[in-house]
Length: 209
Image (tube, rainbow, N blue to C red; front, side):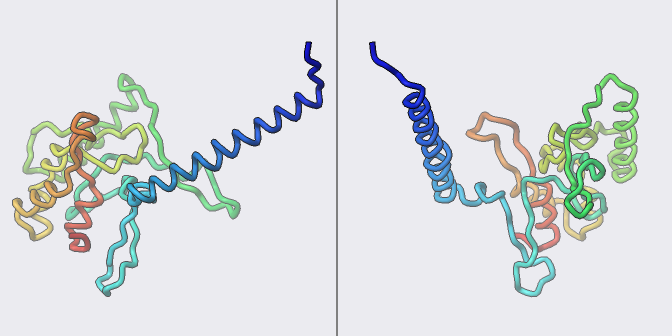
């Protein structure tokens, strides 16, 4: 019978830990990072775009296409309601740190019903030309993340008349912009067709082509 001492056991354990740390924590991470930067640099770096927002010829504004941002003015496309929280976390200097998440309200509860009713009223006031036409659900409900950057093509189409009225662009021009911003299901089968709200609004503002 072989004599396995505690020292040898500890030594082998530490050696195994070091080897696996190098493989999983350094080599694997490095390979994934390299592949991401080589094949998907835009996605790997946070889907950030830089635009010339003030028209001085310099790309001085940065936007993340993965985070929903609140638009409520008449000449921009509205996205899903967001669920920002500025009261839970603060940085070292006491400044609030924004985060978002699901409301966790049951669809059968009165609070959820009241929130949706308020959102429906707000949408109808901004789109009187729609009358009693059904409102796409993603315009009055919060996503699971609370920061969904996309809406359905139907939700974008619902807003075309308002945008045409307030931007000076024709309805066909608005639809062309929306069509250019539609992302199809991943691999043709995963998810649904969606419209990136921020991208549409940057194109409406003329700072993104």
